[in-house]
Length: 207
Image (cartoon, rainbow, N blue to C red; front, side):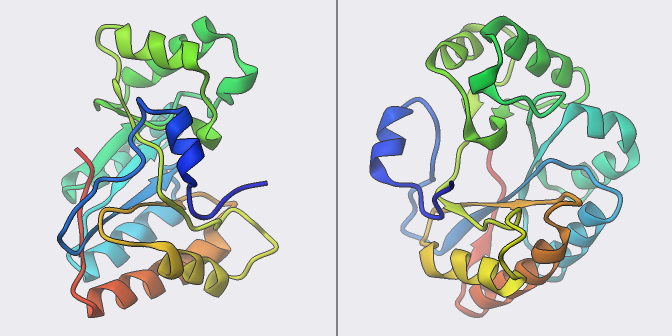
């Protein structure tokens, strides 16, 4: 089960996490989880470039190790990166010490103060340890709108509609530059970029 629009009660349960970036201007924050990926990430970078859009890529350490040139291309294009653990761990099923060590392993490859927990699943103990640990990312970035591009029962058009319906200025939106999401993301992302660009929105990175 997942929620497209993050409800107030969930944000209230994790007050130390960032769910959106309130703005009076027409600016939104696209983010991409689980890369870098040899097919999906170059496609995303090319689409973003068409609209002079910046985004934030929450990368898995092991994927950075496999695809260092693609990771470097994200940085060269001027986008932000974030830590998404080394092995895409589910925080609810992982002891805090192992979880923190896995994030630490990813920092050897990903230089960023941003962290997004895979699946959005992180415990309060893990949050406390992460925020108190030196040299680890201490801005925990969640999201306001989920495209649900990982859901194989949806179409790419469905995913685009999810984003278009629920996004407002300051929203943090999640896509995935992964094999699993590719069929839907590759359709939804161009639709979203086109829709909001025509309405005067800017796409910025999270810092």
